[in-house]
Amino acid sequence: MQQVPVSLWTLVAGIVVTAISIWIGQNHTLMPVQASLQAPLVDGFFNVMFTIAIALFLVVEGTIVLFLIQFRHRKGDNTDGVRVEGNVPLEIFWTAIPTVIVLLLGIYSVDVFNRMGGFDPAGHPHSAAHVAHIPGSAIAATLSDTEATTAPSIAPTIGIGASPQTLDKPADLVVDVKGIQYAWIFNYPDSGITTGELHIPVGADVQLNLSAQDVIHSFWVPNFRLKQDALPGIPTQLRFVATKPGTYPVVCAELCGGYHGSMRTQVIVHTPEEYNSWRTENQIAQQQNLNQVVAINPADLSTSEFLAPHTHDMGISAATLESMVKSH
Image (cartoon, rainbow, N blue to C red; front, top):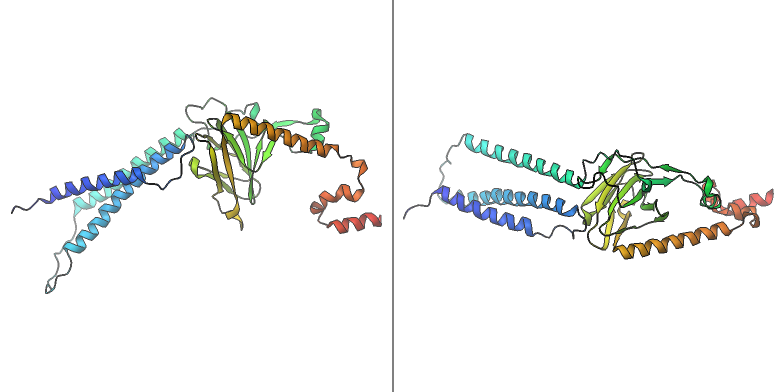
């Protein structure tokens, strides 16, 4: 019986390994549901890397198992094995192939990063939607609109910005996001809404201007395949388009303190109609709350009642404040 050439066995094994790797690499369920325009780009790159990893795993582990069987110690055989000092072609092969793979993956990753907006210099001036109110008293802002001033927010120069298709276009919605220990605060400069959840309309080009009050945080939405650090004193940005209505988790992916694991919130992707309804309802609710605050006449309050909300900042208790007022 004629022996099958090793080269033929190698060819068959290569075909089988390739088929298995491609099938697993394209049909795994390791990633959450895609919910942004950027997600397919990241998943495509991940699938390629995962396919290559499966192929390398099968080749390496398959070779080990094959050699364990073929070159196992047989009963009664006490002879020495074949002396092998080296195989230059094999060493060149297993050095060159990984080098080529790494170079190709590097080129592919740069292309994905660019298409997601990673190369956007973000140095263009902000539009009117990019301005933020200078921090101040809500009462003062309401009583004297002429005294309320605005200043342009610092243009972020780090992060995921506009894609090559939207490079010269302003974002449809700009949200200022601040990370603090241990929560996310979302402020909408165009409407004055402040909330602990991110609400956005599906299909809108959204830009998040990220900052941190205390330590480094990392804004991560797994379903969007996007993650960007929020740095104290250094503005960063994250620009994306949500493609699927729903509620998705927002996680801090940077160890930021003892309660880091609880620094979670959610992004709610609305239809355009639902988003407009949410925006209108929140603007009315916040205006009502503001009117209630303004309606309080400080002249009708006692000294202790007027200062009571500030006892924490003063470092004293309410009882101590009361006794101090009475003593004077």
